[in-house]
Amino acid sequence: MQLILSATNVGYVKKHGDKLNEIDQIVDWEIFRPILMQAYKNKTQKGWKT
Image (tube, rainbow, N blue to C red; front, side, top):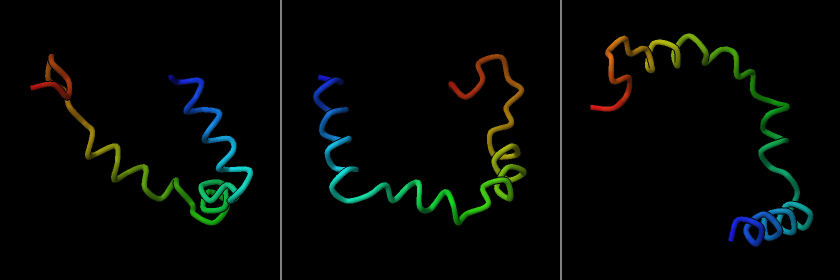
């Protein structure tokens, strides 16, 4: 199943272009790092699981 999905995704990207790559060239993702580091800071033994 994964192979079929991957082949479909490659076909879609070839036909429509890689929009995520275009966005990646524009957005400075590092400005979000401090926010994400705080959002996912969890010092409990279970981590994110409750």
